[in-house]
Length: 466
Image 1 (cartoon, rainbow, N blue to C red):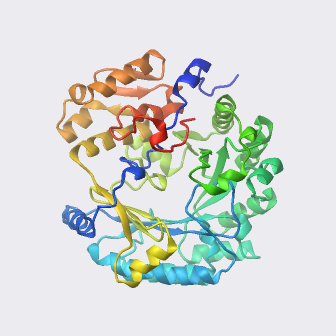
Image 2 (cartoon, one colour):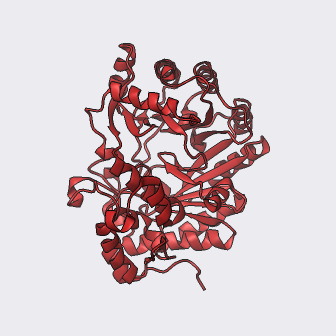
């Protein structure tokens, strides 16, 4: 018998609506173009003055891909000219030189993540130039718990994957995230991502053989032509490789926002009931093989740091997903990269040209941002607890933010009362706790506390909750 949580048809129809993914609060569409460099510098100074100052996390966005995956909603540039990657690294290091003086040199980088796009579009030489260049501008931690991670597309590797994995390890990378999505050939053809299981599984083995300590695999449910049988086959192949973490994302079909998605025939997409069945299948298959459901879209083996952090109450969620590095200031480098410095968010220009022009003028390529209000901070704390732990410690929120929870969140609690009646959440004086079924709808629960949501979904394109 299945041990995956159930969600009745009536609840599916009631709650499967668009909502943010809550990698930040407020979410990126609410950032403002009148956020200034002066404001960013003020937030950086205040963050530097905290005692003790937080460590740093660096995110580098590499936008280049050799071919378009039709499902993709990332900011990317399609090209086969690898020299563009080398030129891009030079620009990123220009940006690093401008950004580094915002932070005290003693604040060590404990996390480096390269995302995309396809970060392994960069040649090994370009990767080496990037990592060594960043080390010229920032003090990198040598502690055993540091994380240097990179997203990999097995289709874009050099001829010798073994050699490549060894070189990644030599450059200091100890985590990799490998894109799979689905091994079903029919699904792969529908999304323009032909990728053999042999190629992918060989890369996992080579990374493990060369000391990469943590391997994540990305899957997607809700893709065109996806079936329960095909997705089960993919899940079991991935599970057999025993990656440390597996992310199972829900496909967000927003063709008005992402041009490539217009290549996907809407009639080939699974409906809400079928999407939920695919998610439940993932929870069931992964749970049966010992993976813990962290929440939202992430699973990890019991000994993984994410599981330990969740048990300790220190798990965090940001633009890179779930993370164990609580309290870091995040600096994003590259086109469209997002930073979270002190009580602010800021984002770079999305276009290569605008981003490069700002750097050539000697300015950080700031496009938009936001200074968090006291209300934003308390709501962010509540939403973070829900997304990371499936529960809210009411007394802890009251003590940290000097509010009376019942009065401050009266409207949110009224919304949650209806969801409690539907069996999605349990409410008492001390805690708000998602039930097993409610954990499938954490975004829906979090939306009750979101003061920035549009009045109608059409005002802001968002992915369905399931």
